[in-house]
Image (tube, rainbow, N blue to C red):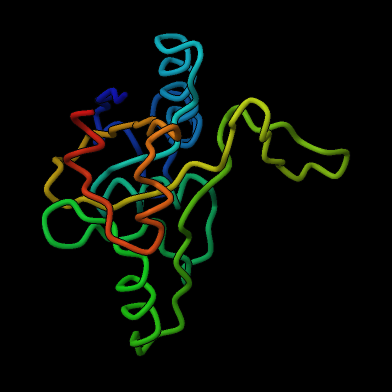
Length: 167
């Protein structure tokens, strides 16, 4: 299951806030998450795809430090390859830290404000995936069916994003 969301990127300033009212872009993404769940009430999205400029907008709206890079690169025409991303990160000459996921809008919070995974409802952090083939102003949210019997066989293999998007 997937849904494409559109937003006007020019409506946001360099700090990731909407110019008209100061709302952080992260709050807009949470609205997209809520809409996804309204349309698929028995599912919570697991994957967020956007281009690198949108990920930068998201990181700035979360007040992330400059050395944090939001999103894992999609490799070779829509394949997620965590091993390759790790090698890219290790080879970097700068002190960057890749943020692979952020809290879902639906994750419960403990008494200290720390977001928790809800295994019963299958609410997990939102994986951030960079696809620079996407235009500015587009976010795709995807729920991947965890009942796919191939998951156990493909834990360490690349994942075909086209397969996820069109599933």
